[in-house]
Length: 49
Image (cartoon, rainbow, N blue to C red; front, top):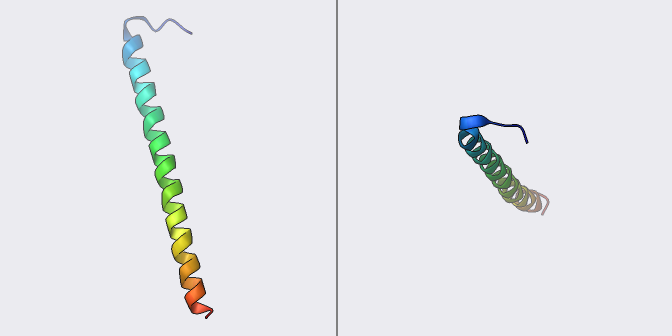
């Protein structure tokens, strides 16, 4: 690991926050996609009889 000097804690905190936020966005996107897929399937089922 490179020597980050006196800014090491700040840099690592920023990386951790970024990773957490990106992971949250991915999870929320997957949850939303599943919900929309279910709604679309219901609409298609109603349309097709």
